[in-house]
View 1 (cartoon, one colour):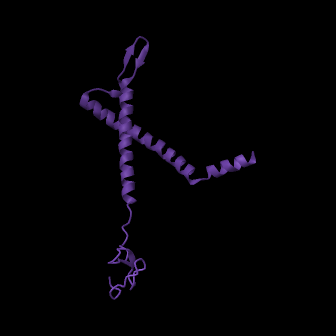
View 2: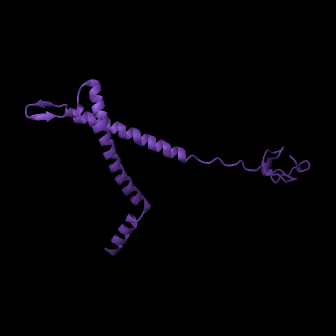
View 3: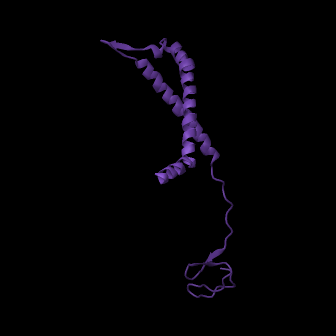
Length: 137
């Protein structure tokens, strides 16, 4: 049982678990911001355009009330949240662009006889044993 708790402790102390916990907390806070934006700003503006308050839309069948306006607002929340996350990920990806490395200095050449790759200083090809002109080619 002691080994089980040690393994659990190692699992909890991993960086991935902490990153996930922070992400969930920030995501919940961000969702609250998006909900406030949609419910208090976008929904009333949209209501002005179409003259309908979406959050109040519903239909009753017998004793059951279907609030499809709340569903429309949830879909709108989803799209706003997805768009905001897209912008955040796009910004993070642009920050992580790889730095271009300087081209490496040429240290090899090609043997004119066997087309093997050999050192620049070589005067004889180690593959075909051909004598190279002045070690230049």
